[in-house]
Image (cartoon, rainbow, N blue to C red; front, side):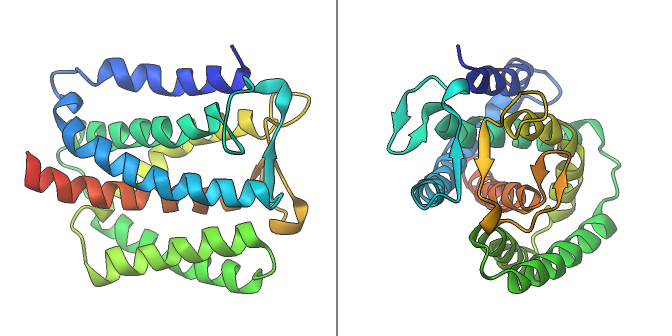
Length: 227
């Protein structure tokens, strides 16, 4: 089994089996969760396919199975299903185990920080496709969901994002070469700003934010209607 597939398996195993925890009962939310993940996954897979074809990023054949859907390895497609599942699991766990949490101010600060930073980095790096797209999309989503719609759960999203930073750094660190001779996923230096968290491009912070926020937005709307 490829290293990338091991990363995918390691990411989903814990959250899946803990989904049946009596306090969280995450499995009862699957009817709302799976459509939300699939809708956003289709958009991100299309984005991924476009950028792979353009050479903005790519994949090291040493660490993948060799099974492709279009230009994307099977593992990369699974990434857009597994990582959101794990993140929304964390989201529900934090709500269940910290009922007295106070996250309103955190959410307010988070929204301003990501909106400002996203627009700033995006506008200053318009020639860098990954930087510009990930950062500006993050800002637009935040403005629409937090500042215009004023959703009540954004503070919980911010709390989740901060907690998920730890597994995020582990998973993305492995994918970008922190523990291997060469990265599993490589990035063209022409389309990123340059600064990295160990081996992880800073843009990945915005990319993951832009993936998770609309998933939780759709998930919360479906959960209200279905459950």
